Image: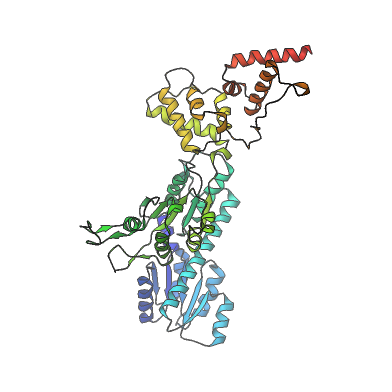
Length: 475
C-alpha cells in the first residue's frame, strides 16, 4: 500500500530540454512537491504509465520521436484519470484550443510564471485525488468490500451507517486531503482516525494533539516547535508535533475549541503546507496529513463567529458524522460481550453468563457517554463479579433514575399517571397494573428488564402478571 500511495501522487515532467526539466523540478521541489519523475525521451512515458500510477503529467508539445500531441491523445484515451498539463513555447491560440479540445487539463506557455505553474500543478493534483476517490467510492459501493478490512478490526459494529463510514474512509484514505470526524464524546472517533492512518499507507507516525485549552502561544509551540531563545525558558530548540508527524498523520482532537488566532495559523498550514517555528524566520514545510475531530457543532460555531468559515471548508474536504450508541442499538450486545471478555482477561476471571434481560435493559438507556460509558460499566461489573451469573446491580446503579432514559423513543413513552374510571383517583391495584404495563412497554416485552425497572424479582413480576390475567379472565 505504501508503494501505491507514493506512486499515485507522482508528477511526471516530459520535455526534451534538460534545462527546462531541471528548472521545473527545482520550482516544484521548493514548493514541497518532490515526488517527481523527469523524462527527456518522450518514448518512455507510456511504458512508465503501464507500470505505475501517477497523479499529473506535464507535457511539452514539440519533441522528437513521439510528439506531445500524440502522447496527449494516447494518455486521454487510455489513462483518463490522469490530468495532463501542456507546457510549450507555442503561443498560438489554435494550438491551445486544439489541446484543450483533446482533453488537456491546462495549457501553459513558456516561460511560465512560477506562482501560476505551482498553482496549476496543485489544482491538477486535487483533480487527480478526487478522481481516485470517486473511483474507489464507486468500487466500494458496487462490491461492498473494503480494501483492508483489518484496519477496522478494533471497531465492533454491525450497524449499516458505521459500515458506510468504513467504506468512505477506505475510499479517501490515500488522497492526503484533510478529514473531519464529528460525533459525540465516546463514539470512537480516535479509533476511526487510527484506522484511517493505517489505510493511508503513510510511512510516518500518527501524532495526536488535543488542542482544547491551548492558547495561541501554547498551540504554536506544541504544533510548530521553537528555536533556542524564542522565549524565556526556551534553552533548547524543540521540534513541534507537525515535524514528528512528517510523512504521517497529524490528528488534532477537539478542534472546535481552537481559538481564532490559532485557527489562522492552522489555515496557512493547510493552504500552503508551510509554518514557522516560534522565534524563527526560516520557513518549514510539512507533508503530514491533517485529521481533526470534534464533538461540537462547527456550523453553529461559524454562525456565532467562533470558527472561521474558510478553515471549516478546508478541514471538511472529507467529513464523517459518527452516530451515537443510542442510534446503534444492535451494537449493544456485541459491544457488551466484547468488553466483558476484555475485562475478564484483564482481571484474570472467567467470563460470566449474562442475564438475558440485561441487553433489553441497556437498549432503552440514552448512553450520554456512548461506547466509552458502556465499556466502563462492563469493567466495573467484572471487577465486582465473584461467581455465577453477572449481576445487573452495577448497571442499575450507574444508569440511575428514569430521567436518564430516552424520552423520545417509541419504546419509552412519556410517563402520564392515569386517573381511575370517571376521573377519580386510581386504586392501588389499578396503579400497580399500570406500572407493570408501563414497565413491560419500556422493556419491549422483556419480563426480566421490566422487573428491573420495577425493582422486584422476575418471579414476583410473574406472580403479579398471573394475578392480572386471572382478574381479567374473571371479568
